[in-house]
Length: 212
Image (tube, rainbow, N blue to C red; front, side, top):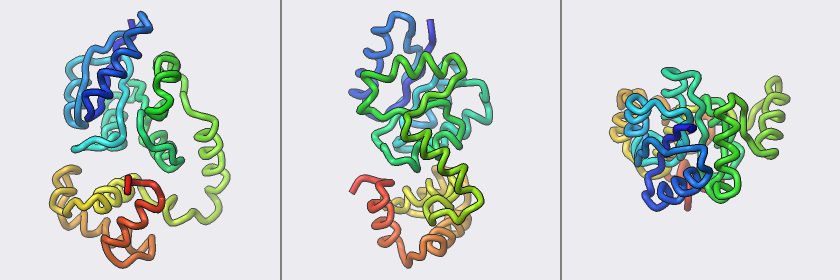
């Protein structure tokens, strides 16, 4: 049996995912989590074979959870599950250490197959994601777009600011100082040629980094 952890902040979504996973008869859900920190704790305790992590969670987002887990458990296959179809999320998830990436819309058809594949040590990404990754490699020597030039942490801070979180709240989530958050904000405004948080929010919505 493949032991699976499910992390999503919506209990109804987790219930649906559990049903899909356990209908396969070859897998069992050994733990569930409604937030990033809880997911990390559950993985320490339950040691699942595969972790299915949602990107959008209220405390630590899926990219941060993936990055931390990849550092502590480099052999743990992580499958990112999200509503976002944008290539930026696909690319960042792979860069953070995820072995696969599927959308919630495709979960009923792809989740079991994706878990099987990452459990075997293989990547599971869509054709669109594969093309985006290939283009990113091809553009390494060229000038990246402002959005592509952002680091993972800058992208995370951008999303939090765009959602209206204060610098103090962001500092607490990522265990960094308020001064460091100020520095990230300054870099974001400079790199994206924006003036304030309102323009950061507009940029994030236009680039589908957050829901309008």
